[in-house]
Image 1 (cartoon, one colour):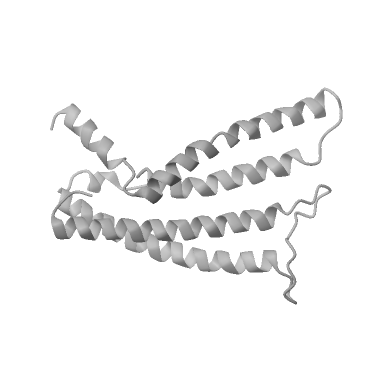
Image 2 (cartoon, rainbow, N blue to C red; image 1 turned 90 degrees about the vertical axis):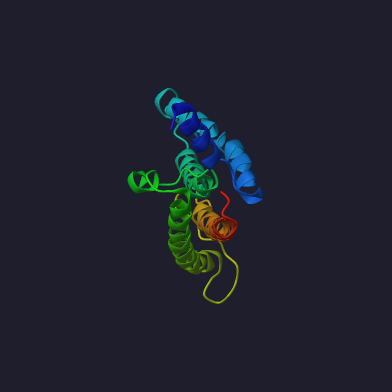
Length: 185
């Protein structure tokens, strides 16, 4: 196969497979600008601490929260853009039909993992958002700044895992359709 055909095939494989994937990629590209905000506030902290000897109480936790949220979202972004980890030694050397079967195995295992993680995440969100007596109270960091970032990050993780579950289901449906129709996804 020529180099141009390989690049064209690779490019098509990396395209979003459905509307959810397209939305995730658009949102992810926009959210990636928050990395610049993280750098900016970290730079602000360095200047305040070492130039003015007036360290902040909020920068470190805010930067960690933003970075954590972005890294969690990176999982669904990788799935949407087909950039997730794969054993290409095998995958790249099998037929398109075999790739669909390998994708199905990936989606089934991934769905099981995402469902278990979503369940575990729900338990942590529940304890981070509600007191044992049922009253809503957000878990905080316990620092001098004391933001509710732990509770918010746990909610972001839970929501992201639910999105990942939906992604796996949609991708499985597309693989099944491709295997039935003998068309590429």
